[in-house]
Amino acid sequence: MLGTGTGVEELGRRIGHLFADPSLLDRALAHRSWCAERNDAVAASGAEAPVESNERLEFLGDSVVGLAVTEYMYRHFSHLAEGSMAKVRASVVSTDSLARAAAELGVGEALKLGRGEELTGGRQKFSLLADAFEAVVGAVYLDGGWEAACSMVLNSLGDRVREAIELPGSDDHKTRLQEEAAGRFGSVPAYEIAEEGPDHAKT
Image 1: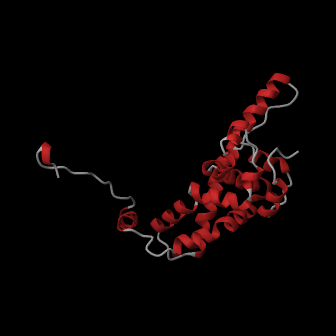
Image 2 (image 1 turned 180 degrees about the vertical axis):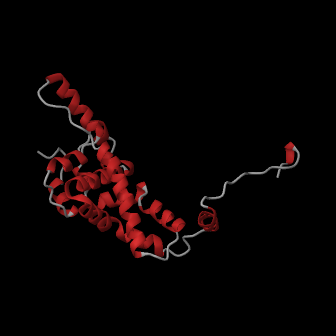
Image 3 (image 1 turned 45 degrees about the vertical axis):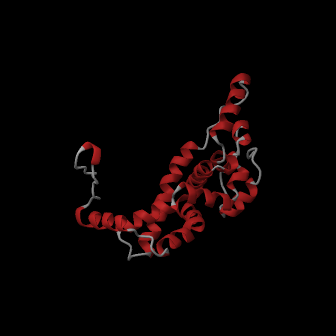
């Protein structure tokens, strides 16, 4: 049975993926705090097997999210240089961005949390929500393959990609210098702070 969080069925509908193996979504929503409490009880009773947290799915989903965003930019924004693509991707896959995407899907309401996390507002923590979003993406990838996972990612993050690309004035001078150096020399500049003058009046 799917876990103790609420809104799991609604989450499945919002994702737009019907799981052939619902246990994958169950695992994607299992925070380590919940697993630790449950596994302590399991160890005491010996009645059930230990449960796995969503951390491995999160690790997988992190790569899937990054690749989906990168492929989307490569295919649809041919004018973007490598440095600009890297900057946009960093913004789109940031903790803040992924947490907001998770909140829009209702991931927080469906999470299985331990008592401590529940009492400290874990369902609203950006880091926890972002991790759970990646875990759900990982679960969709394992259950439905690349197309299903990519569709979920772009449904959630596609607008953010376009907004980041179209944002006026988003390229500061330092970023432009780094992009130019990366394009010409294959690496970004190394910065060094130079000091001169006596100890009491360095410049």
